Amino acid sequence: MGQARNVPPAARGKRWLTASVFGFGVASFLSDMGHEAATAALPGLLILLGSPPAALGIIEGLSDGLSSFAKLAGGFWADRPALRKPIAVAGYLTTGLSTGAYGLATAWWHLLASRGVGWFARGARGPARDAMLADSVPREALGRAFGFHRAADTAGAIVGPAAAAALLAVVPLRQVFLYALGPGVLAGIAFLVLVRPQRETPKPALPFWHSVRSLPNRYRRFLAAVFLFGMGDFARTLLILRATQVLTPGAGAMKAAAVAMSLYVVHNVVYAAASYPVGHLADRFRPERLLVVGYAFGAVTAVLAAVATPALPVLVALFLAAGLTLAFEDTLEGMIAAVEVPAGIRGTGFGVLASVNGVGDMVSSTLVGVAWSVWGPGAAFGIAAVLCAAGTLVLAAHRRT
Image (cartoon, one colour):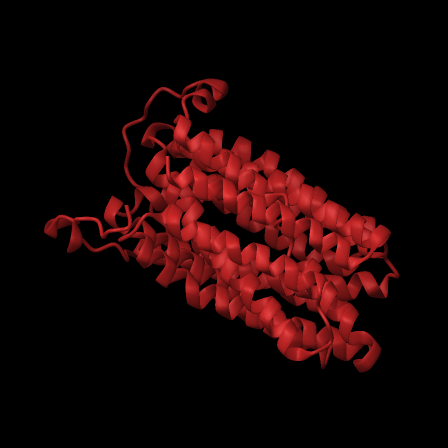
């Protein structure tokens, strides 16, 4: 189970980093550059508007809920190869435009509306993009392809918050969101120009519930672990808010926000740096075994958030653990879906995975945000740690089946 797979020499030598795979990376780099710049600045805008932590939890939770429904529909549409590229391009463009609208908000519910539209579009495009990526490379290179994509995606998530922090020193906070609009729109253009879908013979489309019922039982059990872990895997904006909160008494609100954004950049550097090595390992070893390690990092993240102090080493450790969690999670969950689900319903498989993750994120972000407002951050993140640990144990048991 833990030994390297025997890869045929012919497959081993087949080129996987094609122009299209590179195009997936460019589009995701630009998109993440835009919306992660906005994400890093979002807690600061909520503080400026006088909103409580519960508002951020509700914004992230409901946006993830909308995204989860879009992912389910997007997965069904992605089983129709001719629709994949138009859905992906439209999703990138809409997400970019909604990001710029954050700067116009005068109440937290305006941010909820803008983020909801953007996350719906982001959810709809995901399964189509992932199905196209899985079809673009040989089976033996899936881990490297998904790892490369996540690394490129997260490189944008490094540049975006870093640019936001730099801009914050010279422009008002609201203008940061307007600058973030440009990369998001360019992402849609890059996907349109660079990505070439695989030629496929049209196949009769299965009814939606038939496709869902056709998912393998082993994959369904895997989704149960994903959902349980996801209920504790809260949005990273809550980490930014947590760091800002603990730093503000000693550093002041603006400096605390800038430091918190810088910590988020560190988080994304770790996420980007670890994604490709994780994917490369998954081409040789069981990805489920590696994902157990990633989920364990998620439980550690929640514990560190619960006990966070203004000490910089504690906060750095918190954001490092969070970055490693996403590197394992985002790279390996997609790879497992590509391996476990038959090609004819692979879009549905990606869509159900993304939807399960989205519902889990909706529950976790809302739960943590509301619990934080009612009982304090220690209890809120403590609940998240228990759920993440439970998901880790369920996945470890599933791996042995």
